[in-house]
Every structure is written in structure tokens, then in C-alpha cells.
Image (cartoon, rainbow, N blue to C red):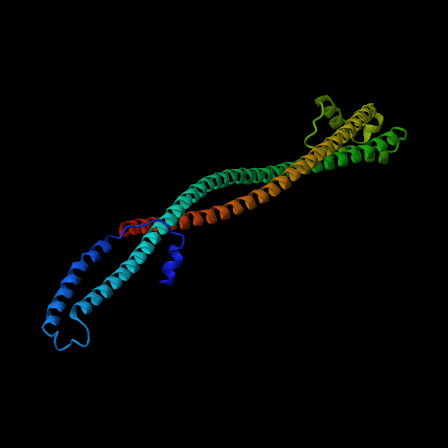
Length: 323
């Protein structure tokens, strides 16, 4: 009773009680009972004259019945009014809750769609960054491989050139000294130095055929080379070749330095780009994880709210039917 009173506090709408009409129909029945009692009591009136007349007792009985019936009717009317008020308030509260839940479900649904879009966008951006990082590393590896091959070729070429230049210096020095002396030993030494130069001549270097023929003829002249004019011609050929080799060596060294500088600049640029992409990838991955967690939480709230709304709807329908 106390629980019902707390729920229905504030209900003021008067509600007709159909049951009270039924209860009013019991009054004639009470009168009939009272009349029966009166008839029965009349036969014994002489023996109970001192107690009071039967009519008076019947009248008193009817009065008591009337008071009791009025009190019962009032009590039942109050109970029914409270129950009807509880129905009204409960259905109103559930209707409001269902409306609010429907609003929340729509809101959660919109948030879910937005988060799914963000996650998909971030996934696409992450994929692009991963592809860019992979390409960057491959390009760096390819550039490094090419630079290593170029440097190896440069080292091999300059090593041959340096050997040929050293042989040229010795051959020219001996030829110049041999042209100023007449000893056979000096002539043989000069031929040996020229032969050493020819042997050290890089495979990548080609000489004109007339110069090659003069060098070969000089080497075949043997001990008489000091008396032949070919020795002076050979000196000129060797000096020209020396200057050419030195120039080629300088050009190769400059080209190697330029290529190495370009390689270092390229690697520096690629390294900077790689670091930026890796930092961006880490950032995007964090954002994606955060949005995925928010999506999971929102989806759970959506499911819970939708389930609660369905339960409220079922309760509302059952209450309306019962009330």
C-alpha cells in the first residue's frame, strides 16, 4: 500500500469506479435480509420485550450495514484510483523513455556512420603511406646499388689509369735520358719502360693505329733504337698520351665526386621523406586505433540502447493492455 501511494502521488484525475455500482446493488439484498430478521424476531417479541423491540434492532442493523458498505466502497475506490494513476504515470514514463531511446539510437547511428567513414579514410591513407615507405626504401636501395657499381667501375678505371700514368712517367724519363747518351744499356732500359707502359695500357683506352705501329716498330728495333729517329717520335707519343691520361683521370675524379654528391643529396632527401612518412604513418595508425575503439564503444551503446528500447516497448504494450 505504501509503495502504491508513493507511485501514485500527484494523481488528481477522478476515475469512475464501475465496481461501486455493483456494490450499491447489494443494498436491497441487505434490506431483504433485514426484513427476514424482522419477521423472525417478531415471533419472539414477547420473550425479548426487555431487550428492545425487533424493529429497532433491525433499523440499527441496517444503519450499521449502510455505514460499512459506504466505507468499503470508498476504500475500493481509492485503491482503484491509485492503480489507474500508476498505469497512467508508468505508461507516460515508458513512452518518454522510448522516445528518448529512439533519439539516442538515431544519434548513435549517425556517429557510427561518421566513425566508419573516418576509419575507412585512415585505412586508405595508411595503405598509401605504407606503399610510399616501401617505394622509398626500394629507391634508396636501388640508388645505393647503382652508386656502388659506378664507384667500383671508377676505382678500377682510375687504378689502371694511375698505373699507366706511372709507367708513362718512367718511360718518358728514360727515353729523354737515353736520347742524350749512347750506351746500349740505357737504350734497352728505355725499351723496357715503353714495353711496361704498353702492357699497363688500360683495356678501355684505345690509341690511334699509326701511334701503335710506331711503338711496335720502336720495340722491335732492339739495340739500334738509340740511333733511330723513332725514339724521339715515341717520346712525343708518350708525352701526348700522358697528358691525355692525366686529363682523363681528373675528369673521372670530378665525375665521381659529382655523382657521389648527387647520390648523397638524393639519399638525404629520401631519408627525410622516409622519416616524415613513418611519423605520419604512426600518427594515422594511432588515430585509426582511437576511432576504431570509439566505434566499438558507440556500437555497444547503440546495441544496448536498442535492446532496452525494445524491452520498454514490450513493457509499454503489456501495461496498456492490462490497464
